[in-house]
Image (cartoon, rainbow, N blue to C red; front, side, top):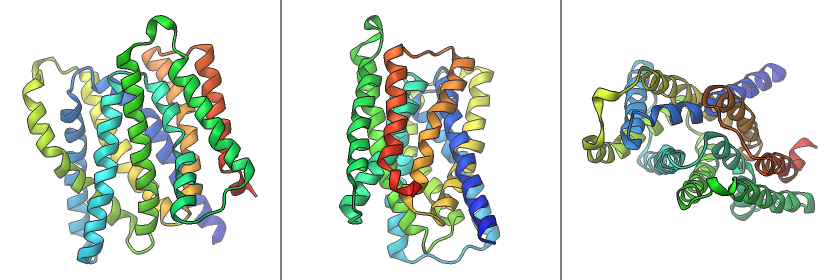
Length: 295
């Protein structure tokens, strides 16, 4: 029974990571036809309709006012701030580099868990945290000289905003997952997210060129909605209800491998040797930062 429970938990984490790994590529494709907020709203409003129907059919138990407020705050960080930073960041930087910067989330989760949950950090964990900073520096400044621009650096900075937002979400969702089902957390998270993005969608609407939307972009939006939004968040919130935030966040460092493969095959993206070294440093640093989880 315990083995079956563990298998289900880690299978859910693996699916979430695969869906999110390809989501960076799908977002890059969709941004060729959609403005950032039109893309985000199309993705979350469709998913919100799905979850509203699901919660209505399941007859989900009532949630008190305090928990309702906490769920709104959760949605403010994820999907709210996270997708604002990620989607705008991807307009300026590559999908592969974005996924490698996102891979530092477990390190930040460990730092905040130490501060707020009073978890002890060993020397090897601290070494991993410092090493991750070196890896990120190689990623950000390891571009070919001609490719470095203020726009690219601004994109990288926005992705760091997504990292912070996702970290707060992981810790918060772990806390809420002790008393609320994964379906309720995900459903209300997505519904609140759609409402948060509605004003920005209306503001961005005039910039859309509806006549020049490619079929590839439409397919990308459908995949982002079905897999990266509905599927991935359900899987990840389910896993967070069963295991700790730090352990679940470690799986995020597998995302760059999936993204790099997809971006190489579908987008023709490449990294410089220095950036490849930086990516290896980041992944190894995440392992060191969370080494206690392997004991």
